[in-house]
Length: 358
Image 1: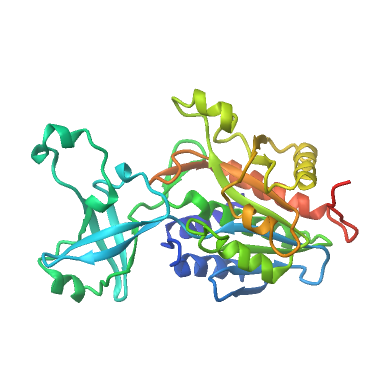
Image 2: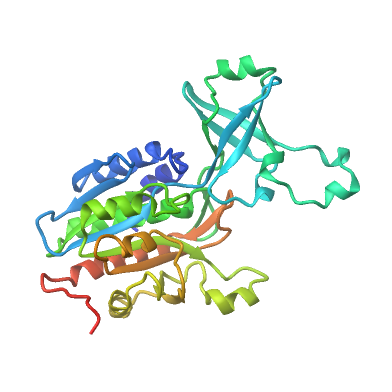
């Protein structure tokens, strides 16, 4: 990682941007891209683009989704309590007691997520798992009029009030690692390519609505418009270096924070692209592991791979602890090594590139 890019990573991770409401995070990404890239722009679906060597061939799409999971206000009762639903997939247990930020039309409004105190619960209720529909947001208001005077409306998005937290070594925690880290990595790869251009045209795309993109989200629309010759997707995957995951390792493989990028093999990961990624990682001495994807990857790769007549697509993931929680953890070295891998892959592409299986 370039030493001067860490402040950008912090700004990007701290910017609120749940699915469907990514504009603020996307602006941070484009502002940074404009310092070194060409043709920085945003489309109607909220996807952001930045290119280097726009006239080169082949055209490579580097995709990381800019959205994060969040919440949305669904109702405001007469006593001023806000009820919420999930944007993306949450474990409601991690929401209880969290501080939150409502992105209102008059500005951000702080609040806390409330639940009946344990002292007031029956013995039966104490052992029941919390459900999001039974929680509420408390902004300190006395009634609905006071809430509305704060600029809050039904439909306003909400994020948890968790900023970047530096931990031991090179590790950080953030609520938005999934997948603001991927959006960061593809732009860092583009930064490396801008310093030493390849013959290929590289386009980094911060895609929208991956967390709710059941039909492909912004990855599908951006790939359709861009018509890439090859695509690399950067997302996060489960780190299996935490307690009680012995059984899960049989399905997920063994990946640890600090162990380098994870290369997906199978499903929407084109085998020829995977083989080239693995070869480049070995040649560049980048530590990495491999993850099997026998069905879907559950990432933007699934949408991009089947766009138009098909796009040869590779998936590179960053090991991530505590997925979809207020404090996901990654290693900065893993982010840097993933960006290095993408840039090295692009530099090895020539105009005669052909990923057609033989």
